[in-house]
Image (cartoon, rainbow, N blue to C red; front, side, top):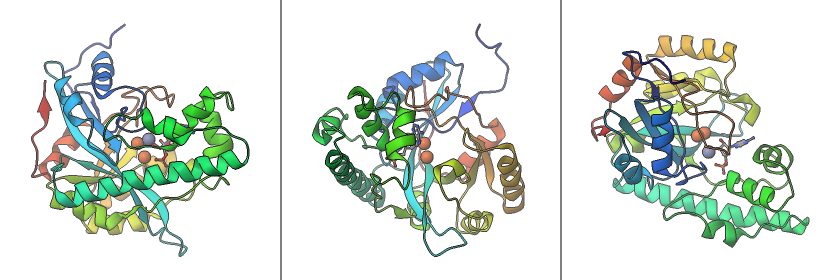
Length: 295
Ligand code: AMP
Ligand code: ZN
Ligand code: FE
Ligand code: FE
């Protein structure tokens, strides 16, 4: 049964397509959003804007597309000396801004490099994944990620599912894990803003992926130009959501909610979490760049 339509738009601000590690094409992502009665969907592939045009062209009448990307970053944790990998969502920035073009190209190339190094380590232990075959399947401008490796391991019969691949071989800190040289998060925030966009800290307390930042770090980033924080995310429990909501109220950060949809690479359906319409309005008020694409 379709959801009874309410007057409030349904908004999902974090979704992946085949331009990175999702399984729906950009047009397929928009179709999935339409099928779930989503009115505003963001395409936020890792380190690329390659899916934007196809997604915009696939919008149905009445739908709107937020054009974004999820930037691979590093941040101090606010505790120990060792930095931690974090993700920054940039929205509505100019995709031709030279700093963004250069940094995203660098990160995609880091990803290719890392894919070769991870498959090399795995091959030494008898796990057969051909990196060039994985890369050959990527669309133009797409970024390679661990979920691509996971799918190759499933296809080779090594593991039963993408999730198993992460649990046994690909998790952060696994012997086969190879880090990449990500962007300092403050640099990424500056870059997104310089390109007319707004920046939101993605799933800052996703603890099951490993270490996370202290709340004081998020407060510091709010003072440095961060516009919002992803509070309602599948990897956040109720206590962390409450903590982040309080922190957002104290620091003026806009609260967002999103599914982090990856098609069949994850079990979360699109719009499993959503953003309030006034929160989206506040966010977009901070962007000086693009208009939202409309169907
Ligand atoms: P990478 O960007 O290559 O470091 O890979 C990280 C991506 O893998 C992120 O987009 C995560 O959403 C995804 N990921 C992490 N853990 C899992 C998991 N257990 N199952 C499926 N995808 C995962
Ligand atoms: Zn992903
Ligand atoms: Fe992420
Ligand atoms: Fe994501």
